[in-house]
Length: 305
Length: 243
Image 1: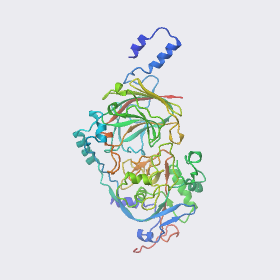
Image 2: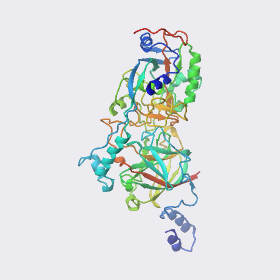
Image 3: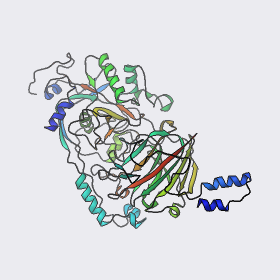
Image 4: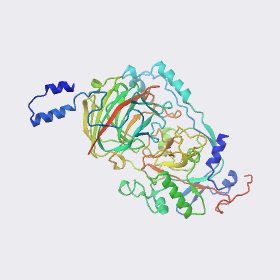
């Protein structure tokens, strides 16, 4: 029940009343709005969120790297007691996760919001990585240096500019579901490096969106480039709860940035603001409504798919 | 030790001798357990006022950072997840004094000019003063000159409090480190290595990660970075801001 309530809450912003399957069936798999933002349709489904099952090391084989490191001083070496304690801690700390059902379809940005798109809507550009701070044209770089409130201001203005649709930040679960694109387990580090602009530590910058491999559902840069704001408040825990907090001091950030390590540039990492500023942006959800571009709040009769 | 040196000092106060004395003073073993004159505490010994936990570092976002017996005590929480404790304030040029006691089989360090997410210059600190302890390296930052201390093993006291003094001056930083009053190195970088040419940042204490959320087949094995239940401890953290 807690899970169900969470999902209902998560979708409280949704104006569409159609059942998931019907609405998805009536929608185009991709669309572009009048300011050039491209969206991909995400269909309903479910996923297990918040699984934490770290592994303890096995005693280092003689001659391995770990054996060599430990050999620096015998006091740094794991004792049989340390291995036993580790197993205890892992057992104590492991989390099985919980099932989240995404019951309605939604469109989500194929890319992070770019600086050109931000300027078209807001008339300004708050990004650190523009002009002489980047190689080439910054227009296709993600907007950076935006707070959660800045993102809301952008969305209010976008909603006024385009009254045919309703735009908002994704909920945290909508973000994770779209980023995972059906994956049940984490990607390997090799796969993450194929998809993510990360660890650009040598005078690095944000990168033009879409420069790496997309995920299985065609989304780019969900991992890396800029951290992405989602709608939810932060619960100050390792992972999200089934129901997001109603209040808080910070909002959740997802996906890591060009300056993150591969270790946390995963679609499981549950970060939060404020972030480092110049590595924080967002992507947008465009709600799906029955009958395509019909008037806001229309409610269609549900029918079997 | 200070008294001993003062007693030997010559009565003749030529400019050259005075300069030598001033230069030599920094080489004297510090009195561990007391903040040197001229430094302002940035940790009150009671709680973590003026500090906060990074929610965007890869080391972990939910570490156990507590204050026990006047010291900051840093432990992993949950297993394998470390973290980063940042000053609320950003610093540019400064002299930092602190005392450290890292348990064996651990890896952490002191960051300076750090971003919220933990891209920073780092003084590495491992248990027992072993490994790369006292090295200047980059953390999520390629720095133009890394430095290793030649003699930290001679001055580090495992299982005891050790004093560290770090001096950082200039946008292209000139950095020097003393451990237990002995100068380890003195280096000037070749450029300002910071992302977006920042010229200041937070001071931070790092607790390294040791395991991924779930096993990842090609992830680094970092399990040697933190023994189960081990801690890093810091106390008497104080700063002298410089122009």
